[in-house]
Image (cartoon, rainbow, N blue to C red; front, side):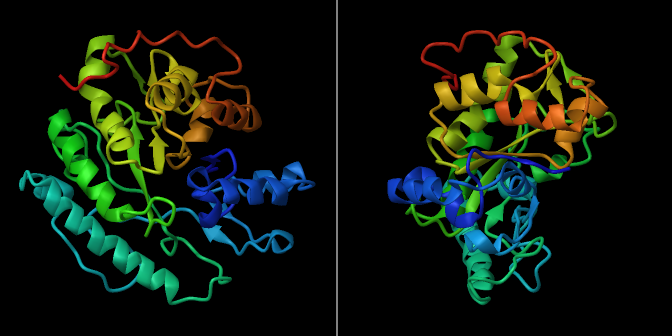
Length: 305
């Protein structure tokens, strides 16, 4: 099951609620009296229609790594590793603008009440800003390479291009992925427990995500399949709540990688069943065991160098 770890994610209009208080109030009012079952249904990647709330069906999965994907004719740019060779954040912003403009045009061509199937929505699961330092990783071409500063700088440009200048009315929502230390190999990715030093975590694997949040103002993040120090990252209070939300001030929503919630119990054995795994992910903290604390963030918190 692909679950969104959003506090009040009901549809694209609601996903931007953090940037508009009147919308927040409208969402809170609409949710009064809504059953737990109906709320849970909207946390799935493929959210069903809810006529009582005026919500059409919406699939949150869309891609725009180097062009709008799988939804008809679109402009195709070089793969991300090729775009990184430009060393040009301003060019990346222009690329992101083209992609989001085409996504928005296709979205707007349908009725506002039309169901949005997979690859038809405005929640774009890009960019991939993992660090490419292992040639065995089969998805290294999706990244901007091995340097955190370059990766973060290009991500900021790309995210700004995707979302546009008005975060209260974004063209699309960018989702920086996969948080964190998800850098191959592909084999065992569903159960891999990363043993990374606190320094390497802060200096190599988190700076680009921090830049995506604090400078690019990404409205969404995706948590990865793997665990860090024994805790699945999609259920890590230390990473998702303490670091991302508290230290970085992130107020957007977090989406899990595909089937990462199932991994929490099926492969990491960190929960007893699917329900407990989903609860752990929504809380951003493990249920069955206590998560080891992450090392204190360096001061200034998470400085790139």
